[in-house]
Length: 322
Image (cartoon, rainbow, N blue to C red; front, side, top):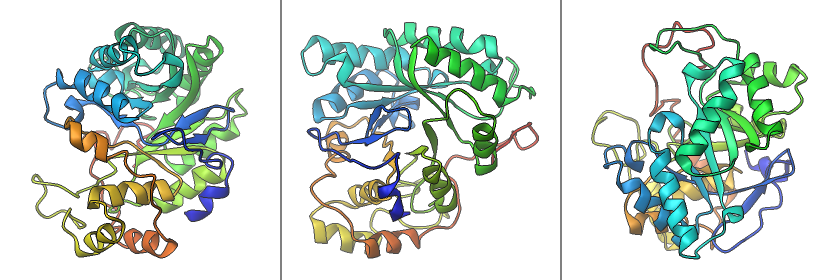
């Protein structure tokens, strides 16, 4: 947990406006806090709002934008980036753009072409981070395939060697899969594992395992069930939880900011989604305070090992990670 701050992949958090960075194992730096996109950035928002959300995020100080081929919004992400650059808010080299390889493109010879397609949609010459979205492979019709992710990783390495992706990593890999990938003696170790982490799913063993290997952890669905209407029976905390409210009042923040800071203080890179300009700005206003060790431990006690994102129907697929 907190020992992550002394590990190679997370040391040297350096303030750069509102976008601190952590060190990756390949020598590059990744900004802490990324704007999450996908499904309109907020689960139900129209996809057209993605462009504005990306622009507002950059305007608010974000330097990391997270997308994926399967989200269907890479074009809108690229438009938001292009607008920000054209208006002089940022230079391309100051941004960190992450995208992901979908499950139906896992054959080695499909990886680079898939990334080139993503780059065309994004309007970029390279991405800063390219991830294998899941260790699971599928055929084009969504039925299970059995392509070894070690083969897929060879294609990822080719993408890095071509400098189409400056860093490469994985997403939704469990500890056994991470170990197998690392043990394969590839040219490049994964720089990142992007997984769900929030107070309801703290993932402490997996987070520690990755960080001990020098692999940074990005945290999607960082709010967990903080605000939920679909899952009335989901475990706490909610946005008005007394513990979170007490901590928020202490620091003059809201409870969403407390949850994001909780992840940052564990050495993670949270990926909050929003299509609301004010909330986008609030979600990166995290770097004028720090939780105590006791507060981090208190929030971790909410853990129930319950996922927000739990794909159904894949349980029998080879390499199912959950």
